[in-house]
Amino acid sequence: MLWTAKTGSLTYGNPVVANGILTVGTNNEGARDPSITADGGVEMAFDPNTGKFLWQKYYAKLPAAG
Image (cartoon, rainbow, N blue to C red; front, side):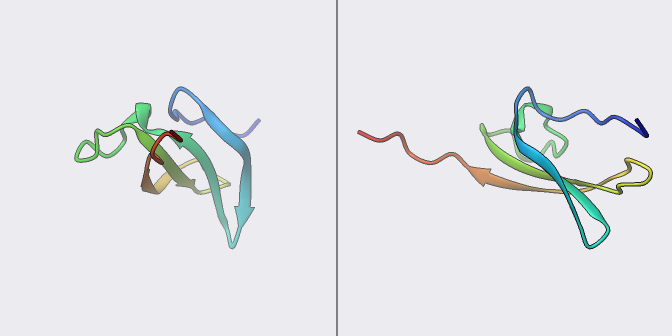
């Protein structure tokens, strides 16, 4: 194991490495971006060699089916 990283309380799918970036889907409980506190999905990106956090993209939760 090269490194570990803090994510949300759940992860979705498996980590993916493409174009020199490792991405993982998680929830927003990790709150790496303090300006986004809403519950939802997050795609986090890391350097696959060092584990350095690069960026995250927030996705709002889908409405519940009624």
